[in-house]
Length: 243
Image (cartoon, rainbow, N blue to C red; front, side, top):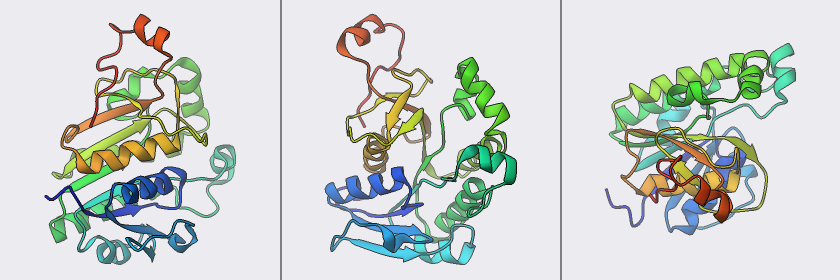
């Protein structure tokens, strides 16, 4: 695969992390296709960016979008208020959008011979399931239980895909403007328990190009201040690993 200039599809491109991934992929010189129900609402414009308005829940939409690409980034999710989703169900997005949408992506990738898959899930599922603090475990159980259950299914779909996959597990997401290189760990350690969507997008774009994390689940968090990082030197493995 030529990583100097790739054709990359971003599924779920109108979410915060998706938009950030699109921007970072463009900055790296790649050709990008933004796929979402309203992809053309993205304000970014470039001669190397095209938009496909489609539904990740529709296998035909996904199949047509995947064809001709070198890699796919998946940032599917529900952006509605989590308490309302728990009590009333989602108003605009199917509850199983993560697992079903990712399943459609994997099927299309297999069909069209596309190997590289980068999927954003969340910290606290899969390999990091047992690492949540008590408050987060309670929030997952009481408020996010249906969404986390679907994210676990998504995680399993990726594991079993047979593709060159990378699972990206950010901690608490923020809309901050910081765009730093995130703290990464393949063994579940974290630094600060928050990270900006911009930083997540930076990693998603870098993971498309790199072979460093293929077949691995990567926890993402914001780097600690230098003094705190020194105190935790022996606790986090790896503290920060470049892709």
